[in-house]
Length: 139
Image 1 (cartoon, rainbow, N blue to C red):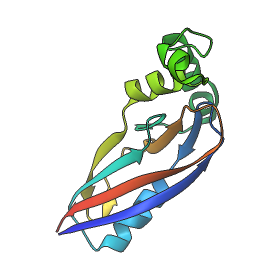
Image 2 (image 1 turned 180 degrees about the vertical axis):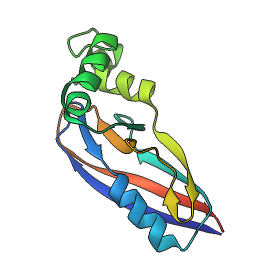
Image 3 (image 1 turned 120 degrees about the vertical axis):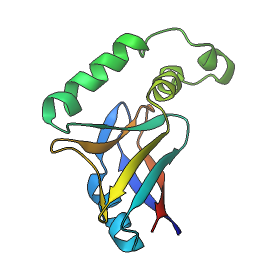
Image 4 (image 1 turned 45 degrees about the vertical axis):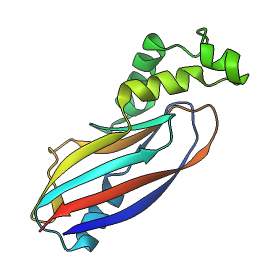
């Protein structure tokens, strides 16, 4: 069986990190699929999805600081020259994180560790409404 749902998330941009674990768990619970996988896919090229321990040090500082070192906001990006905008770093950072995540579903729950949560990271330079596709496959 395959069930597909969308999760809408309001973000502030600028490496805003949103814990979407509860929304994903709800979608899985409503799917009537007990065992399988959930694929999460962010629509758009300036945000990504991963797992982490969602705690203030990581969510409010460490993750943003790491991405700033890799692809700094004040770097020079050909994307910005071409489109005359300010989010070249956002595209690079999102590409490095990735737009999708697969999580096993066991007994109707995402198989996550005790401190592991699913997060959406919005790297764009402005607030956005993000759409995450949740596709649950299983029985």
